Image (cartoon, rainbow, N blue to C red):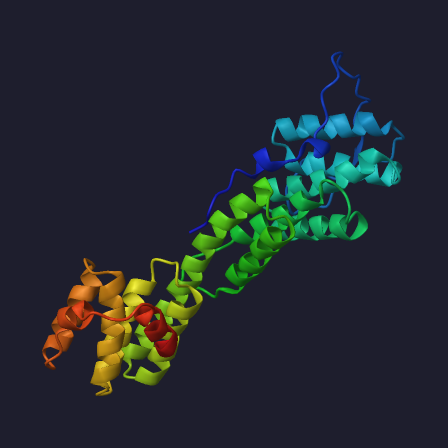
Length: 293
């Protein structure tokens, strides 16, 4: 599933430009090559010297009309004709945003990375990092596929949080990190279940432990604990299964997975309710979890 993000609202004020009160006269466009704008067509804007602000305003008008490819041409033309102007710096990042809007994530990421390398101290640099993260995030697919993009999204989102912890970008990145971690945990669960079905219990245990240890705040942890109980029981390790089942019951006493673990272990003379209700010293459950995982 492709996650959708309203990235437009995060464009910082320094990247925006107010429209002049009086409409700016735009010099007629001259294009070389094809007359239509397909994503896979190579098109170039013929060189006609124009003021940077005129080119930039033309690009914004194309953006307003969702004509992303044409907007990119005008933003790039600002850089070509006025490389040392403030408009060129704005155009560089807006060109990346236009690539993002058109679904061209690779060029969007490349452009944002270029902006960061050339303008590391800019007020717009946090947005460039955020744009990179969003480009990776929106390419996350279902857990049945390779999770390379998910790993890239996780790293990029973490970088936003680490560099700009108090920003709006970081607040949104934290929310997306939760979903990203849930996705990665889901992949681990998918592989772990496969190993469990194949009777490869040690491999399955490694996957389920990884979920509990690395993604403990995700929705996958509850099932991971139950699957560990199943795997340990299959290996005849009833004591280990009892300990994991106790952690499951202590944290999710009303959950279906705990009920399944309770039912399974009761066949081996283990009463998880009794184990959980035994009075323990302070910190017992934390220490038990640390020992198990």
